[in-house]
Image (cartoon, rainbow, N blue to C red; front, side, top):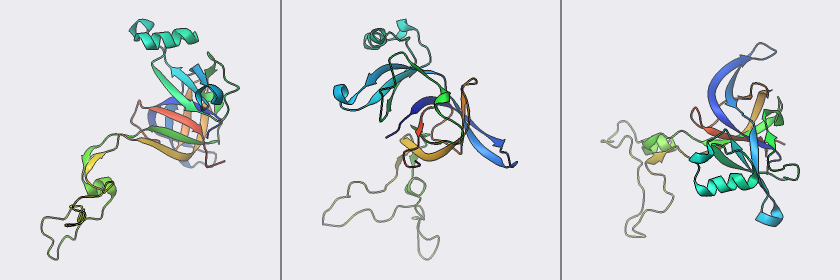
Length: 212
């Protein structure tokens, strides 16, 4: 599990030049300071995590449970609540602010977000199938998925079969990305390569679990 994490917003992609004058593609993440609303521990909740909020929202526009939750914590209401699972939460307190300075340049991170939805897609696009032959007797089946089941036994299609359906719009985590630049003053984090999600998507950045 992660030891530190932060919530950000995907701005888009650009490129910068490193010390060797080589182009580095980066994703720009806007990381505004997050406020800790709740600290969950193994003794009270069965797992350790912190619940944070980002942005500012008018308290009059919250429903009663949300308003009561922020009021009990004594924290200004935010636009969204996000839970960050961490190994150790002893250093966090309710009301504490977490910024981009929690991550440093050169550090390896994992980024989680909801991927872009692509709507209904066929088996070739969705599962990277090769497709049927273009000739040699293949008739109007070039992009078909092929055989999907059996005949009389068991007379059904097994669950989990790769078939056409909705593509994207899933929770995706990209592992072992490198933080190229961390700028707490500008509230910006530059991560090498691409991260899941569309522009404006909420992303969770944590220190790399497998890259330690």
